[in-house]
Image (cartoon, helix red, strand yellow):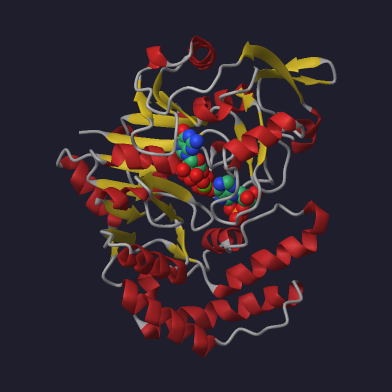
Amino acid sequence: MTVKMVIGTQWGDEGKGKVVDYFSKDAEYVVRFQGGNNAGHTIKVGDEIYKLHIIPSGVIQGRTGVIGNGCVVDPEVLIYEIEQLKKRGINPKLLLSDRANIIMPYHKALDGAEEKLLADKKIGTTKRGIGPCYSDKIARRGIRSCDLISKESLRKKLELIAPIQKQFYKVFKISEGIDLEELVDKYSNYGSQLKQYIAPTHKILNDAISKQKNVLLEGAQGTMLDVEFGTYPYTTSSNTVAGGASSGAGIGPRNIDEIIGIVKAYTTRVGEGPMPTELFDDVGKHLAIKGHEYGTTTNRPRRCGWLDLVVVKHSCMISGITKIAITKLDVLNGLPKLKICTSYIFYGKNISEFPADIEMVKECKPDYKEFSGWEEFDAGVSSFKNLPKEAQLYLKFIEKQLKIPISIVSIGPGRSETIEV
Ligand code: GDP
Ligand code: IMO
Ligand code: MG
Protein backbone atom coordinates (compact mmCIF):
# COMPACT_ATOMS: atom_id res chain seq x y z
CA MET A 1 0.00 0.00 0.00
CA THR A 2 1.27 3.49 -0.76
CA VAL A 3 -0.02 7.00 -0.64
CA LYS A 4 1.79 8.76 -3.45
CA MET A 5 1.67 12.40 -4.36
CA VAL A 6 2.45 14.16 -7.63
CA ILE A 7 3.19 17.88 -7.46
CA GLY A 8 4.56 20.54 -9.76
CA THR A 9 7.91 22.12 -8.87
CA GLN A 10 7.73 25.13 -11.21
CA TRP A 11 4.92 27.47 -12.33
CA GLY A 12 2.46 24.75 -13.37
CA ASP A 13 1.98 22.79 -16.59
CA GLU A 14 4.93 20.54 -15.81
CA GLY A 15 3.04 17.50 -17.12
CA LYS A 16 1.34 16.47 -13.86
CA GLY A 17 -1.68 15.12 -15.77
CA LYS A 18 0.48 12.77 -17.81
CA VAL A 19 2.39 11.46 -14.79
CA VAL A 20 -0.77 11.09 -12.67
CA ASP A 21 -2.37 9.09 -15.49
CA TYR A 22 0.77 6.92 -15.65
CA PHE A 23 0.68 6.14 -11.90
CA SER A 24 -3.12 5.78 -11.82
CA LYS A 25 -2.99 2.20 -13.04
CA ASP A 26 -2.01 1.10 -9.52
CA ALA A 27 -4.28 3.46 -7.55
CA GLU A 28 -7.75 2.95 -6.13
CA TYR A 29 -8.40 6.64 -5.59
CA VAL A 30 -6.90 9.65 -7.39
CA VAL A 31 -7.42 12.80 -5.36
CA ARG A 32 -7.31 16.52 -6.17
CA PHE A 33 -6.66 18.43 -2.96
CA GLN A 34 -6.42 22.09 -3.97
CA GLY A 35 -7.23 24.52 -6.76
CA GLY A 36 -10.20 24.49 -9.06
CA ASN A 37 -10.78 24.68 -12.77
CA ASN A 38 -7.85 27.07 -13.12
CA ALA A 39 -5.91 23.82 -13.63
CA GLY A 40 -5.62 22.18 -17.02
CA HIS A 41 -4.23 18.65 -17.03
CA THR A 42 -3.67 16.88 -20.33
CA ILE A 43 -3.72 13.12 -20.78
CA LYS A 44 -2.89 11.50 -24.09
CA VAL A 45 -3.99 7.92 -24.67
CA GLY A 46 -3.21 6.73 -28.20
CA ASP A 47 -4.71 9.37 -30.46
CA GLU A 48 -7.17 10.58 -27.82
CA ILE A 49 -6.40 13.76 -25.87
CA TYR A 50 -8.27 14.60 -22.66
CA LYS A 51 -8.01 18.00 -21.00
CA LEU A 52 -9.32 17.96 -17.46
CA HIS A 53 -9.79 21.04 -15.31
CA ILE A 54 -11.49 19.86 -12.13
CA ILE A 55 -11.95 16.10 -12.51
CA PRO A 56 -8.88 14.15 -11.31
CA SER A 57 -6.79 12.68 -14.14
CA GLY A 58 -7.12 9.13 -12.73
CA VAL A 59 -10.68 8.74 -14.10
CA ILE A 60 -9.22 8.15 -17.58
CA GLN A 61 -7.73 4.89 -16.23
CA GLY A 62 -11.13 4.08 -14.65
CA ARG A 63 -10.04 4.95 -11.10
CA THR A 64 -12.28 6.79 -8.62
CA GLY A 65 -11.55 10.50 -8.83
CA VAL A 66 -11.93 12.38 -5.56
CA ILE A 67 -12.35 16.16 -5.47
CA GLY A 68 -11.12 16.92 -1.97
CA ASN A 69 -12.25 19.49 0.58
CA GLY A 70 -9.30 21.75 -0.28
CA CYS A 71 -10.59 22.30 -3.83
CA VAL A 72 -12.89 25.05 -5.02
CA VAL A 73 -15.54 23.76 -7.40
CA ASP A 74 -17.53 25.45 -10.11
CA PRO A 75 -20.52 23.10 -10.37
CA GLU A 76 -21.36 24.22 -13.89
CA VAL A 77 -17.86 23.29 -15.08
CA LEU A 78 -17.87 20.00 -13.17
CA ILE A 79 -21.22 18.95 -14.67
CA TYR A 80 -20.03 19.95 -18.15
CA GLU A 81 -16.79 18.01 -17.72
CA ILE A 82 -18.69 14.88 -16.59
CA GLU A 83 -20.99 15.17 -19.65
CA GLN A 84 -18.06 15.63 -22.02
CA LEU A 85 -16.33 12.51 -20.67
CA LYS A 86 -19.56 10.50 -20.93
CA LYS A 87 -19.89 11.56 -24.57
CA ARG A 88 -16.42 10.09 -25.15
CA GLY A 89 -17.36 6.80 -23.51
CA ILE A 90 -15.93 7.43 -20.05
CA ASN A 91 -18.44 7.42 -17.20
CA PRO A 92 -16.23 8.90 -14.50
CA LYS A 93 -16.28 7.36 -11.04
CA LEU A 94 -16.32 10.45 -8.85
CA LEU A 95 -16.60 11.66 -5.29
CA LEU A 96 -16.92 15.30 -4.26
CA SER A 97 -16.08 16.34 -0.72
CA ASP A 98 -19.06 17.64 1.21
CA ARG A 99 -16.72 20.36 2.50
CA ALA A 100 -15.39 21.69 -0.84
CA ASN A 101 -16.15 25.38 -1.38
CA ILE A 102 -18.29 26.32 -4.35
CA ILE A 103 -17.29 28.92 -6.93
CA MET A 104 -20.31 31.23 -7.32
CA PRO A 105 -21.04 33.66 -10.19
CA TYR A 106 -20.04 36.62 -7.98
CA HIS A 107 -16.57 35.08 -7.53
CA LYS A 108 -16.03 35.08 -11.28
CA ALA A 109 -17.35 38.64 -11.62
CA LEU A 110 -15.07 39.85 -8.81
CA ASP A 111 -12.02 38.03 -10.23
CA GLY A 112 -12.46 39.86 -13.54
CA ALA A 113 -13.23 43.23 -11.89
CA GLU A 114 -10.20 43.09 -9.59
CA GLU A 115 -7.90 42.26 -12.49
CA LYS A 116 -9.38 45.17 -14.44
CA LEU A 117 -8.76 47.51 -11.53
CA LEU A 118 -5.15 46.36 -11.21
CA ALA A 119 -4.67 47.16 -14.93
CA ASP A 120 -0.97 46.76 -15.84
CA LYS A 121 -0.27 45.42 -12.32
CA LYS A 122 -2.72 42.56 -12.81
CA ILE A 123 -1.89 38.98 -11.74
CA GLY A 124 -3.03 37.48 -15.03
CA THR A 125 -5.46 35.09 -13.35
CA THR A 126 -7.50 32.54 -15.25
CA LYS A 127 -10.61 34.57 -14.25
CA ARG A 128 -12.28 31.40 -13.00
CA GLY A 129 -13.18 33.01 -9.64
CA ILE A 130 -10.46 31.10 -7.75
CA GLY A 131 -9.07 33.98 -5.64
CA PRO A 132 -12.44 35.42 -4.54
CA CYS A 133 -13.76 31.92 -3.70
CA TYR A 134 -10.75 31.11 -1.49
CA SER A 135 -11.02 34.59 0.08
CA ASP A 136 -14.64 33.87 1.03
CA LYS A 137 -13.66 30.45 2.36
CA ILE A 138 -11.08 31.96 4.71
CA ALA A 139 -13.46 34.79 5.66
CA ARG A 140 -16.02 32.07 6.56
CA ARG A 141 -18.70 33.17 4.12
CA GLY A 142 -18.30 30.36 1.59
CA ILE A 143 -20.97 28.08 0.17
CA ARG A 144 -19.85 24.46 0.42
CA SER A 145 -21.04 21.50 -1.61
CA CYS A 146 -23.09 20.20 1.36
CA ASP A 147 -25.02 23.50 1.28
CA LEU A 148 -26.33 22.80 -2.23
CA ILE A 149 -28.43 19.83 -1.19
CA SER A 150 -31.26 21.57 0.69
CA LYS A 151 -32.81 24.50 -1.16
CA GLU A 152 -34.02 26.06 2.09
CA SER A 153 -30.67 25.95 3.81
CA LEU A 154 -28.96 27.29 0.66
CA ARG A 155 -31.42 30.21 0.65
CA LYS A 156 -30.68 30.97 4.33
CA LYS A 157 -26.93 30.99 3.69
CA LEU A 158 -27.24 33.17 0.61
CA GLU A 159 -29.52 35.62 2.43
CA LEU A 160 -26.57 36.28 4.71
CA ILE A 161 -23.86 36.28 2.04
CA ALA A 162 -25.53 38.06 -0.91
CA PRO A 163 -25.70 41.51 0.79
CA ILE A 164 -21.94 41.33 1.45
CA GLN A 165 -21.25 40.42 -2.17
CA LYS A 166 -23.45 43.33 -3.26
CA GLN A 167 -21.17 45.62 -1.27
CA PHE A 168 -18.15 44.19 -3.10
CA TYR A 169 -19.95 44.82 -6.38
CA LYS A 170 -20.30 48.48 -5.39
CA VAL A 171 -16.59 48.75 -4.55
CA PHE A 172 -15.60 47.21 -7.86
CA LYS A 173 -18.28 49.13 -9.77
CA ILE A 174 -19.91 45.98 -11.18
CA SER A 175 -23.18 47.10 -12.70
CA GLU A 176 -25.08 43.79 -12.91
CA GLY A 177 -27.08 42.77 -9.86
CA ILE A 178 -27.21 39.62 -7.72
CA ASP A 179 -30.60 37.92 -7.90
CA LEU A 180 -30.95 35.81 -4.78
CA GLU A 181 -33.82 33.62 -6.02
CA GLU A 182 -32.07 32.98 -9.30
CA LEU A 183 -28.95 31.87 -7.42
CA VAL A 184 -30.95 29.63 -5.08
CA ASP A 185 -32.74 27.95 -8.00
CA LYS A 186 -29.64 27.51 -10.14
CA TYR A 187 -27.32 26.25 -7.40
CA SER A 188 -29.84 23.93 -5.75
CA ASN A 189 -30.42 22.48 -9.19
CA TYR A 190 -26.66 21.86 -9.48
CA GLY A 191 -26.89 20.31 -6.01
CA SER A 192 -29.54 17.85 -7.23
CA GLN A 193 -27.30 16.84 -10.12
CA LEU A 194 -24.16 16.49 -7.98
CA LYS A 195 -25.79 14.93 -4.88
CA GLN A 196 -24.86 11.42 -6.03
CA TYR A 197 -21.15 12.34 -5.75
CA ILE A 198 -21.15 14.41 -2.55
CA ALA A 199 -19.63 12.49 0.36
CA PRO A 200 -17.29 12.79 3.37
CA THR A 201 -14.30 11.98 1.18
CA HIS A 202 -11.76 12.41 4.01
CA LYS A 203 -13.41 9.47 5.80
CA ILE A 204 -13.55 7.33 2.66
CA LEU A 205 -9.85 7.99 1.99
CA ASN A 206 -8.78 7.23 5.55
CA ASP A 207 -10.78 3.99 5.46
CA ALA A 208 -9.09 3.09 2.18
CA ILE A 209 -5.65 3.79 3.66
CA SER A 210 -6.37 1.63 6.69
CA LYS A 211 -7.41 -1.16 4.30
CA GLN A 212 -3.99 -0.88 2.60
CA LYS A 213 -5.36 0.54 -0.67
CA ASN A 214 -3.25 2.74 -2.93
CA VAL A 215 -4.11 6.42 -3.02
CA LEU A 216 -2.64 8.92 -5.49
CA LEU A 217 -2.73 12.62 -4.67
CA GLU A 218 -2.80 14.91 -7.72
CA GLY A 219 -1.38 18.40 -7.27
CA ALA A 220 -2.56 21.29 -9.39
CA GLN A 221 -0.57 24.41 -10.26
CA GLY A 222 3.04 24.36 -9.07
CA THR A 223 5.15 25.42 -6.10
CA MET A 224 5.94 28.86 -7.53
CA LEU A 225 2.17 29.48 -7.65
CA ASP A 226 1.77 28.50 -3.98
CA VAL A 227 0.20 31.35 -2.04
CA GLU A 228 2.97 31.30 0.59
CA PHE A 229 6.09 29.96 -1.12
CA GLY A 230 5.51 31.12 -4.68
CA THR A 231 6.13 34.46 -6.39
CA TYR A 232 3.57 36.24 -4.20
CA PRO A 233 1.39 38.10 -5.13
CA TYR A 234 1.74 36.57 -8.61
CA THR A 235 0.47 33.22 -7.40
CA THR A 236 -2.77 31.31 -7.18
CA SER A 237 -4.77 31.34 -3.93
CA SER A 238 -4.14 27.86 -2.53
CA ASN A 239 -1.32 25.81 -1.04
CA THR A 240 0.09 23.87 -3.95
CA VAL A 241 2.97 22.41 -1.90
CA ALA A 242 2.88 18.87 -0.51
CA GLY A 243 1.66 20.09 2.89
CA GLY A 244 -1.54 21.25 1.21
CA ALA A 245 -2.52 17.65 0.50
CA SER A 246 -2.86 16.81 4.14
CA SER A 247 -5.36 19.57 4.92
CA GLY A 248 -6.85 19.52 1.41
CA ALA A 249 -7.72 15.83 1.47
CA GLY A 250 -7.94 15.17 5.20
CA ILE A 251 -5.04 12.70 5.27
CA GLY A 252 -2.50 12.80 8.09
CA PRO A 253 1.00 13.76 6.88
CA ARG A 254 2.48 10.54 8.29
CA ASN A 255 0.35 8.53 5.84
CA ILE A 256 2.06 10.02 2.81
CA ASP A 257 4.81 7.70 1.58
CA GLU A 258 6.13 9.21 -1.64
CA ILE A 259 6.19 12.74 -3.02
CA ILE A 260 7.06 12.91 -6.69
CA GLY A 261 8.12 16.33 -7.92
CA ILE A 262 7.45 16.98 -11.59
CA VAL A 263 10.23 18.98 -13.23
CA LYS A 264 9.80 20.15 -16.82
CA ALA A 265 13.22 19.98 -18.52
CA TYR A 266 12.95 23.74 -19.02
CA THR A 267 10.69 26.43 -17.47
CA THR A 268 7.33 27.87 -18.48
CA ARG A 269 4.91 30.28 -16.91
CA VAL A 270 1.44 31.61 -17.82
CA GLY A 271 0.27 34.95 -16.48
CA GLU A 272 2.21 37.85 -14.99
CA GLY A 273 5.06 37.98 -12.49
CA PRO A 274 8.85 37.56 -12.65
CA MET A 275 10.52 34.53 -14.18
CA PRO A 276 14.32 34.90 -13.98
CA THR A 277 15.23 32.47 -16.80
CA GLU A 278 12.64 33.73 -19.31
CA LEU A 279 13.97 33.83 -22.91
CA PHE A 280 12.91 36.26 -25.62
CA ASP A 281 15.11 34.82 -28.35
CA ASP A 282 14.98 31.94 -30.84
CA VAL A 283 15.57 29.37 -28.10
CA GLY A 284 12.45 30.66 -26.32
CA LYS A 285 10.58 30.29 -29.60
CA HIS A 286 11.97 26.76 -30.08
CA LEU A 287 10.66 25.73 -26.62
CA ALA A 288 7.25 27.34 -27.21
CA ILE A 289 6.75 25.80 -30.64
CA LYS A 290 8.23 22.35 -30.02
CA GLY A 291 6.65 22.13 -26.56
CA HIS A 292 3.24 23.41 -27.78
CA GLU A 293 3.37 25.83 -24.89
CA TYR A 294 -0.13 27.24 -24.83
CA GLY A 295 -2.19 27.30 -21.62
CA THR A 296 -4.54 24.31 -21.32
CA THR A 297 -7.18 26.44 -19.59
CA THR A 298 -6.92 29.88 -21.17
CA ASN A 299 -4.97 29.08 -24.35
CA ARG A 300 -2.60 31.98 -23.59
CA PRO A 301 0.98 31.51 -24.86
CA ARG A 302 3.23 30.28 -22.06
CA ARG A 303 6.43 32.18 -21.38
CA CYS A 304 9.44 29.89 -21.86
CA GLY A 305 12.98 29.78 -20.50
CA TRP A 306 15.87 27.61 -19.33
CA LEU A 307 15.55 25.23 -16.41
CA ASP A 308 15.86 27.11 -13.11
CA LEU A 309 17.30 24.96 -10.33
CA VAL A 310 16.99 27.73 -7.72
CA VAL A 311 13.24 27.31 -8.20
CA VAL A 312 13.29 23.51 -8.24
CA LYS A 313 15.55 23.23 -5.17
CA HIS A 314 13.23 25.59 -3.28
CA SER A 315 10.26 23.39 -4.25
CA CYS A 316 12.00 20.15 -3.29
CA MET A 317 12.86 21.56 0.13
CA ILE A 318 9.38 22.92 0.92
CA SER A 319 7.60 19.73 -0.12
CA GLY A 320 10.12 17.13 1.01
CA ILE A 321 10.15 15.65 -2.47
CA THR A 322 11.38 12.04 -2.51
CA LYS A 323 11.60 11.38 -6.26
CA ILE A 324 11.82 13.45 -9.43
CA ALA A 325 10.02 12.96 -12.74
CA ILE A 326 11.58 14.93 -15.60
CA THR A 327 9.13 15.76 -18.37
CA LYS A 328 9.37 17.09 -21.93
CA LEU A 329 13.04 16.17 -22.35
CA ASP A 330 12.27 15.62 -26.06
CA VAL A 331 11.49 19.34 -26.46
CA LEU A 332 15.22 20.08 -25.97
CA ASN A 333 16.12 17.85 -28.96
CA GLY A 334 18.04 19.69 -31.63
CA LEU A 335 19.23 22.62 -29.51
CA PRO A 336 23.03 22.86 -29.94
CA LYS A 337 23.65 24.33 -26.48
CA LEU A 338 21.64 24.11 -23.27
CA LYS A 339 21.74 26.10 -20.05
CA ILE A 340 20.68 25.41 -16.48
CA CYS A 341 20.40 28.20 -13.92
CA THR A 342 22.17 27.18 -10.71
CA SER A 343 22.00 30.47 -8.78
CA TYR A 344 21.04 34.11 -9.21
CA ILE A 345 23.19 37.22 -9.33
CA PHE A 346 21.59 40.08 -7.40
CA TYR A 347 23.59 43.29 -7.90
CA GLY A 348 26.85 41.34 -8.00
CA LYS A 349 25.94 39.06 -5.11
CA ASN A 350 25.41 35.33 -5.65
CA ILE A 351 22.07 34.04 -4.32
CA SER A 352 21.00 30.42 -4.11
CA GLU A 353 17.77 30.76 -2.08
CA PHE A 354 14.59 31.98 -3.75
CA PRO A 355 13.86 35.47 -2.32
CA ALA A 356 10.59 36.39 -0.58
CA ASP A 357 10.55 39.94 -1.93
CA ILE A 358 9.09 40.06 -5.43
CA GLU A 359 10.96 43.30 -6.18
CA MET A 360 14.21 41.45 -5.46
CA VAL A 361 13.18 38.50 -7.68
CA LYS A 362 12.64 40.98 -10.53
CA GLU A 363 16.30 42.04 -10.25
CA CYS A 364 17.78 38.52 -10.05
CA LYS A 365 19.81 37.54 -13.10
CA PRO A 366 20.39 33.83 -13.74
CA ASP A 367 23.87 32.34 -13.38
CA TYR A 368 24.06 29.52 -15.92
CA LYS A 369 25.99 26.32 -16.43
CA GLU A 370 26.24 25.34 -20.08
CA PHE A 371 25.73 21.89 -21.59
CA SER A 372 26.15 20.38 -25.04
CA GLY A 373 22.89 19.60 -26.77
CA TRP A 374 21.93 16.46 -28.67
CA GLU A 375 20.20 15.58 -31.93
CA GLU A 376 16.70 14.13 -32.15
CA PHE A 377 16.27 10.82 -30.37
CA ASP A 378 13.76 8.14 -31.16
CA ALA A 379 10.35 8.48 -29.44
CA GLY A 380 10.58 4.76 -28.72
CA VAL A 381 13.66 4.98 -26.45
CA SER A 382 12.73 2.92 -23.42
CA SER A 383 15.78 3.04 -21.19
CA PHE A 384 17.97 5.74 -19.70
CA LYS A 385 21.15 4.23 -21.15
CA ASN A 386 19.72 4.51 -24.68
CA LEU A 387 19.24 8.27 -24.39
CA PRO A 388 21.98 10.36 -26.05
CA LYS A 389 25.05 10.68 -23.79
CA GLU A 390 24.58 14.48 -23.62
CA ALA A 391 20.99 14.02 -22.41
CA GLN A 392 22.20 11.59 -19.75
CA LEU A 393 24.75 14.18 -18.56
CA TYR A 394 22.06 16.88 -18.46
CA LEU A 395 19.81 14.65 -16.33
CA LYS A 396 22.63 13.46 -14.06
CA PHE A 397 23.59 17.08 -13.38
CA ILE A 398 20.00 17.83 -12.27
CA GLU A 399 19.93 14.75 -10.06
CA LYS A 400 23.25 15.64 -8.46
CA GLN A 401 22.23 19.22 -7.80
CA LEU A 402 18.89 18.25 -6.27
CA LYS A 403 20.28 15.23 -4.40
CA ILE A 404 17.02 13.42 -5.19
CA PRO A 405 16.77 10.43 -7.54
CA ILE A 406 15.12 10.82 -10.94
CA SER A 407 12.61 7.96 -11.22
CA ILE A 408 10.83 8.90 -14.45
CA VAL A 409 11.93 10.58 -17.66
CA SER A 410 9.10 11.56 -19.98
CA ILE A 411 10.00 11.92 -23.65
CA GLY A 412 6.57 12.53 -25.16
CA PRO A 413 2.96 13.15 -24.14
CA GLY A 414 1.81 9.52 -24.55
CA ARG A 415 1.79 6.81 -21.87
CA SER A 416 4.42 4.72 -23.62
CA GLU A 417 6.82 7.64 -23.99
CA THR A 418 7.87 7.20 -20.40
CA ILE A 419 11.21 5.85 -19.16
CA GLU A 420 11.36 4.36 -15.67
CA VAL A 421 14.84 4.88 -14.31
P1 GDP B 1 -0.13 19.88 -16.15
O1 GDP B 1 -0.96 21.08 -15.90
O2 GDP B 1 1.07 19.83 -15.26
O3 GDP B 1 -0.91 18.60 -16.12
O4 GDP B 1 0.44 20.03 -17.62
P2 GDP B 1 -0.41 20.44 -18.95
O5 GDP B 1 -1.22 19.28 -19.36
O6 GDP B 1 -1.09 21.73 -18.76
O7 GDP B 1 0.78 20.74 -19.95
C1 GDP B 1 1.73 19.77 -20.28
C2 GDP B 1 1.67 19.52 -21.80
O8 GDP B 1 2.82 18.80 -22.20
C3 GDP B 1 0.48 18.68 -22.24
O9 GDP B 1 0.08 19.08 -23.51
C4 GDP B 1 1.04 17.27 -22.27
O10 GDP B 1 0.37 16.41 -23.17
C5 GDP B 1 2.44 17.53 -22.75
N1 GDP B 1 3.47 16.58 -22.27
C6 GDP B 1 3.57 15.96 -21.07
N2 GDP B 1 4.72 15.27 -20.99
C7 GDP B 1 5.37 15.47 -22.17
C8 GDP B 1 6.63 15.06 -22.69
O11 GDP B 1 7.42 14.38 -22.03
N3 GDP B 1 6.95 15.50 -23.94
C9 GDP B 1 6.14 16.28 -24.69
N4 GDP B 1 6.53 16.65 -25.89
N5 GDP B 1 4.94 16.68 -24.23
C10 GDP B 1 4.56 16.28 -22.98
P1 IMO C 1 -1.99 23.51 -13.82
O1 IMO C 1 -2.63 22.64 -12.75
C1 IMO C 1 -0.25 27.33 -14.96
C2 IMO C 1 -1.71 30.88 -12.87
C3 IMO C 1 -2.47 31.90 -13.68
C4 IMO C 1 -2.08 33.17 -12.94
C5 IMO C 1 -2.04 32.72 -11.49
C6 IMO C 1 -3.29 33.04 -10.70
O2 IMO C 1 -2.52 23.24 -15.18
O3 IMO C 1 -0.52 23.46 -13.71
P2 IMO C 1 -5.73 31.96 -10.66
O4 IMO C 1 -6.76 31.86 -11.73
O5 IMO C 1 -5.31 30.66 -10.08
O6 IMO C 1 -6.09 32.97 -9.59
O7 IMO C 1 -4.43 32.60 -11.40
O8 IMO C 1 -1.84 31.32 -11.52
N1 IMO C 1 -2.24 29.51 -12.93
C7 IMO C 1 -1.66 28.51 -13.63
N2 IMO C 1 -0.59 28.52 -14.43
N3 IMO C 1 -0.90 26.17 -14.71
C8 IMO C 1 -1.96 26.14 -13.87
O9 IMO C 1 -2.53 24.99 -13.47
C9 IMO C 1 -2.41 27.36 -13.31
N4 IMO C 1 -3.42 27.69 -12.48
C10 IMO C 1 -3.29 29.00 -12.24
O10 IMO C 1 -2.03 31.93 -15.02
O11 IMO C 1 -0.78 33.57 -13.30
MG1 MG D 1 -1.78 22.68 -16.99
